[in-house]
Length: 352
Ligand code: GLN
Image (cartoon, rainbow, N blue to C red; front, side):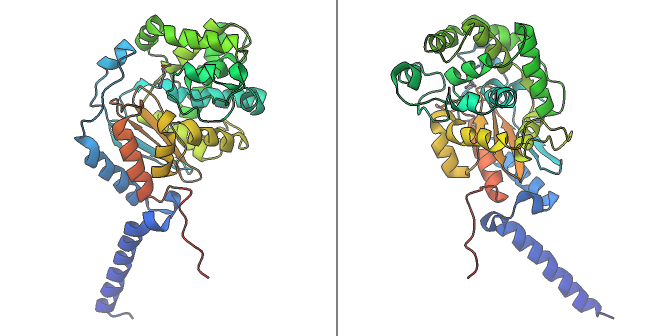
């Protein structure tokens, strides 16, 4: 029989070992799924508390209703490949998905027509310019023999939307909406007020659609493509929806909660590559430097990020920085991912 004092000291040893493992988990790059649920939850709670009072950035206002969205909305969600959902803060409030939609429309085109449909036309290179840059079109491959674009900036995204199959405008939009819903694992819907507000003020995107048509990136009906793109940007999501969408990409294309296959496993790394290249617009390099994670932001205040095989994470907080990326979301995701060893590039040398 083990002496009670010895038992207690062993127990104590075990507990502190666990604590040590937790503290160094980030440094040792233990994948999140190998970590205790409590440790994952603690990482979310810490980031939530740390940035709750942060007041930097401002809501987007070039789409008038976005300026009126409550700047205090702040929610974090993380979904692991085994379907566990972790949350902190406000994961009920919804914002418009905005540019995060671009990832899922690109995914749809890849599913329907194969990845080369995107790769050989729009491309997979960073433009290094703002998300709605017109100069980037003028300098691009088909306009000028210049560099390629990618489906995560407005010109490439509107072109990707134009490639979605369907018999009518409504048919195309409904198939996009139901595809996003499969990623989120629930039936999503459009925020009509946002759709109207952006439709009334999206002359710049209409010009982008027309230019993309002029340079043959869009085959037909550029105004319809811009209109559908605007509506897809107005789809309402909360942090949990976004984290489940990201979690599906972290899990090889199968929604880890509903277990539905949404995307072919082969298409996932290609999509993640484009997110790594261009997901946070002209700040994508900085983001990759800090986190190593493919991500995507939207001017509604959401950011998603994917640690392949480990987790999908999303944060919603409307105030944005100069590049158009949510300030709190960037900070919270970087902290959480780094605490959980989420950076796929960070490995320890093999013991010789
Ligand atoms: N709907 C917005 C636009 O086209 C999306 C931009 C974004 O989220 N960066 O301008």
